[in-house]
Length: 159
Image (tube, one colour):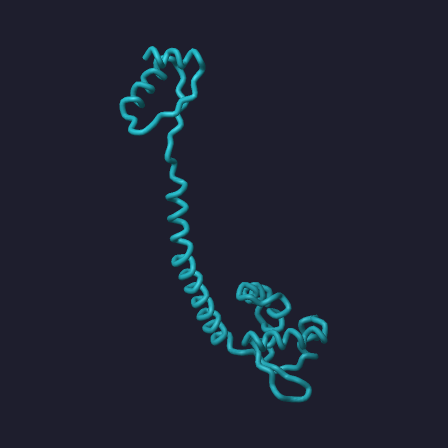
């Protein structure tokens, strides 16, 4: 019998919890079996096994057989993977459609709104400041806001 640990990890990646993965792996390995036998092999409490079998059945991983005592068998791993792949692709397509149709326009609007409309300059040195102020005055179209000391303001007026 192959090492169940690697298969159980793979099955949990498909969305099964650890107990469900153990039971499904056992069903695949053993064929048709009872809840009592599953409990003995997996070490899962007998009462919990019924809950797990029903969960696997609702997810399509197991089939319940009409018998006394209740027996079940695993669904084909190949068929299950086809179904999961189809569901996953449909879910991805839906999410992609939602993101592109709704979030992309919101993103574009927010990007435009967050573009800076003003520039902040921090220039050191008297001659560098004067050069930049002259340049800004020459190219300004609307307004220039400056924060200056009193001494800086008197130099600007002189300029």
